[in-house]
Length: 153
Length: 153
DNA sequence: TGACATTCCGTGTTATAACACGTATTATCC
DNA sequence: GGATAATACGTGTTATAACACGGAATGTCA
Image 1 (cartoon, rainbow over the protein chains, first blue to last red):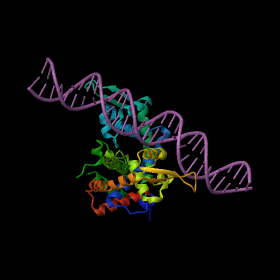
Image 2: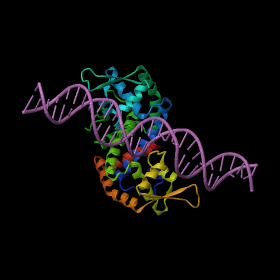
Image 3: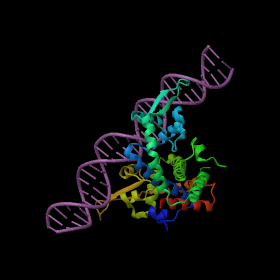
């Protein structure tokens, strides 16, 4: 029997409702998973937000994306993408150039260094994810994904 | 058919593995749920971390808890609990007093105002949680909780 | 075409998170 | 009992998040 959330959080009273317990379970699980990923990124001096930007830009291939397109593809809300990109540009991971078609936009692409870094992280990331979910078989993983998708409605 | 994570994040390529998709699903769901809760807390000038401290302290009854006990009961890692408590003390939500048994410890309890605030939030929080998970029935909620518990190992 | 609204982006500022370190108190061990 | 280690907490500092605002470019509509 795996220890449940109440003992994890040293909580004495039962949860008010299943929905409440589900919320806390999602939040607690996310925190643990994120900690593992962040430890993996730390030696590369990457934050999770920066890593997500790298993956988003890799998905855009050489065409690149403007700031708001990047923002909309990020997993968590991020109201200050400009300065996030500032730091990544200073680190030589991305390259920004003002768009010629719409001069309001700024197109962002990966540098060779950025591309190499995100590629290099694929294998350890995959290993970490497998490790994190090793307790669940394929059927259970699919079920978990389906239930979360359903919750997001 | 609910839209899946790839379309949510406007991602074109399939996920590398089920474990990877599960991680992103948990992260994305947590972000959405958290946004809803934070919107609810905002009018009360409470951050989610502060609200969690209020609930932890309510769970401790009148005995109170020292800083590290609070930290260990929080859902997400929080390395700067001292100043989090500073702000809550300044807002009149908590009360701190140095322990007499172990003078290294500082015992923290809810003020009447803090207790009233957290009690007052129970009903809207419950409604929000029910709303967030309204797509799932009791069996599915239990299944989700079980799978997340299993993942946390 | 000109006024107005909208979109895209950056920035000033404040608040908070994160990390490392220091001090006071207690526990441990000889 | 005294030196040493361990624990609990706070703080100095830097980095990042969050919010609101403003300027530049584009779209809209009379």
